[in-house]
Length: 96
Image 1 (cartoon, rainbow, N blue to C red):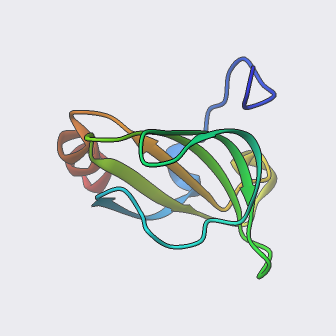
Image 2: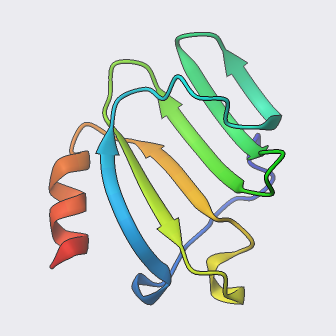
Image 3: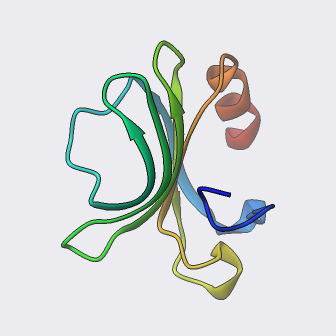
């Protein structure tokens, strides 16, 4: 509900780069959604430089950051940031 969508998928061909990071301290952009400082971020963020991010992060879990191609199949987002305990395994599978 906070993401304004029930489901979002991105084709593997839209992923240009991926990395596993910790909780980002950078300014993600102007938020629509939920932000509990240092604990949870859930929503969409638009950075002043135009980058649109789909964010679902939980403190204490690694974050998988994907950079997407600018194509309609990416759903209008440039970077999804998703926290998951198995982020390293997911990233390894994306790299093939």
